[in-house]
Image (cartoon, rainbow, N blue to C red; front, side, top):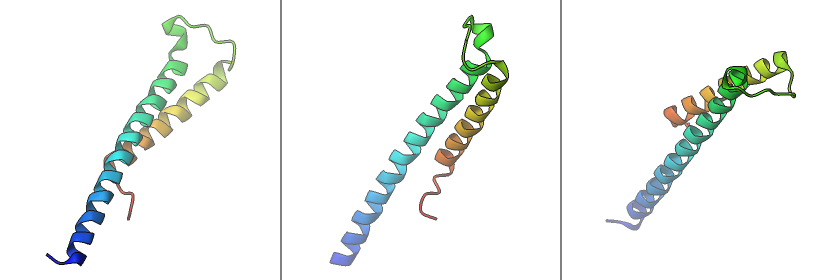
Amino acid sequence: MTAESEEKRAEDKRQKAYVYRRALMDYGMGLIYVAMGLFFLLSDKLGFELEFPTKPFSYIFAGFCLLYGGFRIYRGYKKNYFR
């Protein structure tokens, strides 16, 4: 094996490790955002009385959290970080 091929393999290994860590972080943060959105959406049914934000803003914020959480999970699934 030449030095160039060893260097290329090492670089590929580093990139694969980076992609794995980044995808894992995207999955984790996506689940956190989805859970936060579900909490704000279902807070009344769960028995929590939120003083702030008021109801319409709470639902809007929950929608944004669910959308962004879904996007983070999708980005972790696609693993399209270098293209």
